[in-house]
Image 1 (cartoon, rainbow, N blue to C red):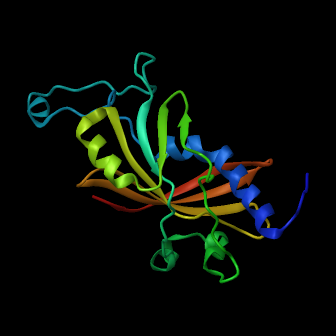
Image 2: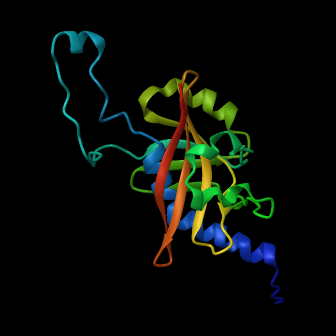
Length: 192
C-alpha cells in the first residue's frame, strides 16, 4: 500500500470532515418539512381557524425525501459582499479555492428526518418528484465550500427548490468550535 500526501488531498479531507459535521444542520436549516407544519388555507384563515405549530416532527412521519445535486454550482459572492461579515470575506481572495462539499462517492444519505438521494443531473428526477406534493422536500443545490487558511471559518451558497415558483437561496457561514464545524449564520439572499 502506497500512502501519498499532497495539499489537495489534505484540503479535500478537511472538506469531507466539514460535510460530516454539518450536513444534518444544512438540511435542517434549509429544507422545510411542511407535512406537519403547514399554514391554514385562505378559507381557513378567513374563518379564524388556526393550526398548531409543532416544534418536532411526529415519529409517525417517514423521513422527508430530498434530492441533492452532486454538481456544485458556481456562485459569485461579489454582489453580496456588503452582507458578508468581514471575517468571512476571505472568500474573495484569489488564493482561496473552493472545494466540493458533497463527497464524490456518496449516493444516498439517511437520517431520522431526511432521506437524501445524490444525483449528478437531478433536474429530471426532481420534475418527477415535484408532483408528489408535501412528501418531497425539494432539490438542494450547493456551491463549493470555501475554507479560510486557518481552517476555522467556511462559507457556502445553497438553494432549495420545492417547485417551479418556490425556492430560497442562502449563504451559509460556518465556524469550527472545539474541533467541530457548526453553522454560525445563514444569510438569505433570494426567495420566490
